[in-house]
Image 1 (cartoon, rainbow, N blue to C red):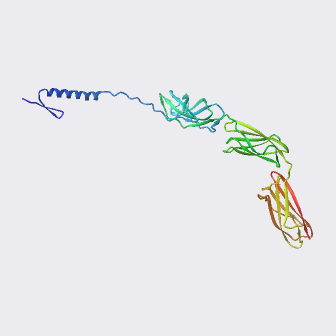
Image 2 (cartoon, rainbow, N blue to C red):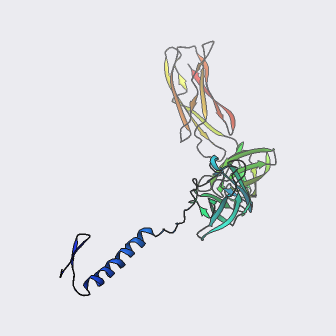
Image 3 (cartoon, helix red, strand yellow):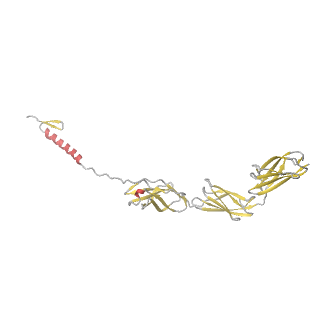
Length: 343
């Protein structure tokens, strides 16, 4: 038979000198390669350790401190508490500088952990924590920030001026210091102390009772980090009195008919400035035993004035009087009288 037909894998091969051998040789090599690939064992790939979420650092109630070190605290998931091989790693970003690793502690028997004596640098210290196990590291925790401030706050007193004379029972001290500072003012003359808190611009105002004569007042500011500074001012309580001016729309009236009358009071403080907020009570008395007419307590306006209008009854011939009582918190009480005539 001159030719032989061989069916191999759906391919018809014709017998020709040298063809069969070469074809089968190629097929053998191809099959050998396929079999080799199918039977080759894949190399094992590295598997990363699966870590729980990042630790939680305790958020400070007061981020400011004047201490150069602090104990950082936080918690880890309860599922890994008391397990060996786990640790907490601490990173710090100081100001605008790079983030650096500063400490690492093993996990203890409880979910809580403490990293003792972590050093601070002046200014902002932003800390984060990661969980480390078997060479793997979790993402960082949320940042918590501490601010190291060891500088004393400045105190600038804007009022009152040096050795000022204060015509009143109190002095109002205003000034500027570090925002958020606690301010106290102690009067050594009467041991009275008043306190205030500087606002977010550093401005403060505190009202201190004063005694007669010279009053030395020590003003102390304590900033949020705990640093303190002091300034001393001296004021003298003046002997000035309130000035009151009582007037009326008339002073002579008929005793046989009712009469309307308008009374006016001007109140000036010891420095001669109109005093608003003073309480004034007017009263009217008449000849004989006629009842007294009394106003309700009234208050002076921004110009130091207050008025009251009323009607006087029929009365006898003789003398009457307008009286006024002026009451203030800062300057005490003052009385004023104006005579009236009924004829």
